[in-house]
Image (cartoon, rainbow, N blue to C red):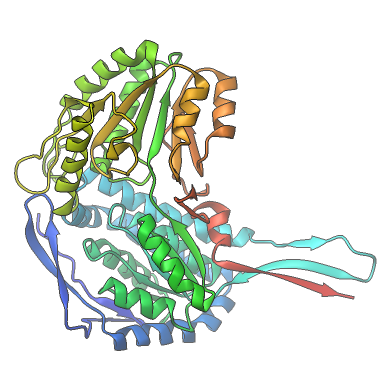
Length: 475
């Protein structure tokens, strides 16, 4: 299967090659070969994108929500029609298996459909006042928006930002990761073919520092939405401070998974093992720190190791592959270093632990008895590694779950209803899944607390993040 996406910039309704001097080679992580060159935007390209977004904003914000919604619905339909092609592009750029890639494309289409309808329910409210007086609260689009999205879910996380911003009446300038530009191109091609007006949506590739400083430091951009590492997020926050630009940050995580002895162990294992190795563990809400009640700890390890050994790794385009490669050449060494450190500090390697053959592969790995002093217990591995530790009491495991400065997602498996309620209340996390991993859905907010960021994407909260509130009082 060949890589057939024509990589270009999309500015003011026109596809163009880009005037930047540099370019980046897109690499297929399954074999390490270059498959395309990404055109880089110059400063002049960025200035043109900003001017277009600024010029188009007044008309787009005034466009009837039915018309806005119709364009978003059409884009969703085109994404579904092209899902097979886009999924193959995604697998070749990023490595995830084809079925996961296709589900990501379909999930992206769902976001456009959902926001196309949600904007019609953006009613505002009227306050209680004496006869003859009127006070009302309305929401209006914040203005042109800059979005920065990551490579692990390169079309879904881009769609989460762009769909909500466009529905709200904002114009956008989007910079996708240069490792996965093809699926971003396909998303914007769907918007263009759906009839998005000139200047409403811009796609720019290129140098991260040039683009972030130019966009965030401009007078045109009024909101920044970023998904990525905590360190980069803090850097962008500092850039946004000078211009008082609003920001939404979805940053790193290190999700705890609490396994209690009253769970259905076999059913739980059948859920957690595939979820752990989904997208080779390169998921911001990936279950990572497994805390297992001591009475079932040995049985859990045995079942997890047996299932891990059966996970077939290979090219994501092959039908029988269950886990593809890591996304880039840096990741196998980084994951391997974390495993070596954990083993040196007393952890047991029960499955995997080594690089795979060719490409950027790494074996699905299970570590047992991992001490808190191990780096992997404190730093997000972002790879196919499950770390486990036993616990005895509820208070003990809650302390461990909340120990880190991250708070994006947390999971628990228990059949005790009161315990489930307490976990939902006490755990320090923006999202909690109890007996489920289905926490990223179109109609629910997605976001973290502490060093995992602030603000939400998804749900009505995602729409509100691209709006400002205005109170109007009339006597």
